[in-house]
Figure 1 (cartoon, helix red, strand yellow):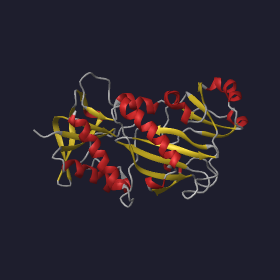
Figure 2 (cartoon, one colour; figure 1 turned 90 degrees about the vertical axis):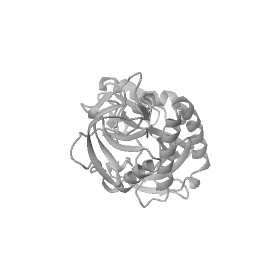
Figure 3 (cartoon, one colour; figure 1 turned 45 degrees about the horizontal axis):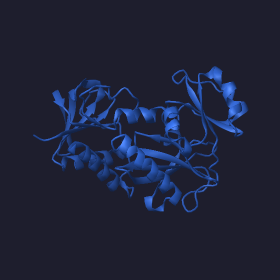
Figure 4 (cartoon, rainbow, N blue to C red; figure 1 turned 30 degrees about the vertical axis):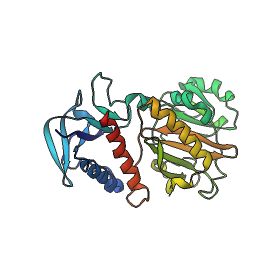
Length: 313
């Protein structure tokens, strides 16, 4: 009996095009499904909205011969590659499927305050703010003239403030994100020699304990946010070209996470300062390379190897 592997999203079970929302990275997603099929696994695209527990999805799409077909009957999945974002999936359950990434690692990435407490020596000084009424008492503890305010559980750069501390006092926390952290501002305007000039965010993707893909993001003019969702530009960087100190920190983090969280797949976001690199945050939801990027095949192959290692257990 062949193993069943599925990629899970939050979108509802509708139509016969479960990856219609992916956009220009669709060829890379389809390639991942093809590589899974080459392992003789049955391959599915899933939605958390049909999950019934115990690895059973009551409705899915099966991928076969480059096409999708709706499966209305329940299917029991052995391994789920989680692309849902947030923490509504996977649920806590004693006997669920193998999930990439495991729930405890997802919670670590989701909670930026917890992440800081786990890896503080590699990150800018961070202070818990909580609700907005605490902001005035927290800001004097930030030693830099500028401050970064982030929702402790935000995504895609939404709700972030970067600017002078006096202006931060008038910043309104969005209703959806009532609790925040404050970080000392890290000046990355010096760039990274040979890689990027000026402000930047260097992202390193890690799978199976190794850096498998890297790119640098730069903010649009007049902004400090390099998130692609906020208009940032992206440029692929060969992992062999990463600064030695970035590789060293990546290896240290990777060794710890591999053992503690069952070999997760994630990204580390670095900023290079005059004193060296610091990690802004890490994410359990890795953005895929576009088809044209040189490391695309290795990135996908290592994901499949990650699945295979987990299934062997």
